[in-house]
Image 1 (spheres, rainbow, N blue to C red):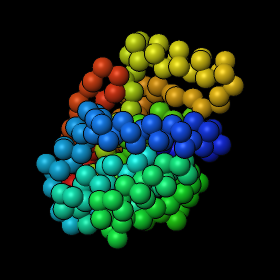
Image 2: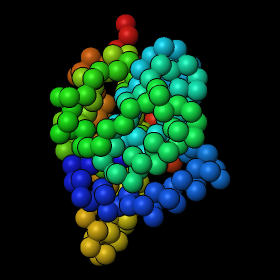
Image 3: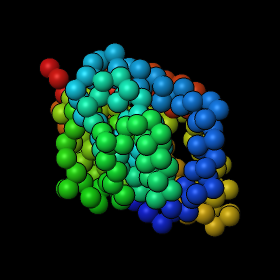
Image 4: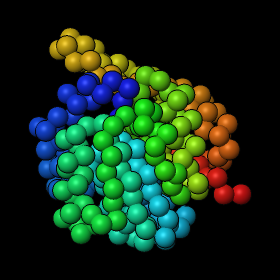
Length: 214
């Protein structure tokens, strides 16, 4: 994940929390929603394509797609613990030579980031308190497909995330999760010349893929 508040990201996704995420991945594999995104992108054809994974976490989207014909991945992550673990995972899968890693807040470094055939943001939009620049800048980097996973704007998602944010506030944790209106996000993406080609709603998350291909 990434966020406008880099210090909050570092504290939220520290070595202990990331280690727990690694253990979870070892025992259960990637999450259901991420699996849906990955498999849907595969079905659209990824051979020889490049990927920009913003807020890459453990780098699992890139790993999955590289093992299915993707040419290369650029991972961007604002948590140093996540980024180091992503490097470790890539080395274990012998994919390090096809993967690059950049530490930083994407919105701040976007000018220096290259465009890619596929751009993904898995549970990243909800970690930014400045929606518009994140969406617009990431869309600008998209040559073919733009895949996102973010919370549905339902009352139960808002209630659950609101409670989590309250607990963080009480504990002095400045990290926050945001539930943006689906229509607003969809409009911002379409304004960048992208068309929605896949949609799947789960209890909390929604998985959406847009295409620039006409």
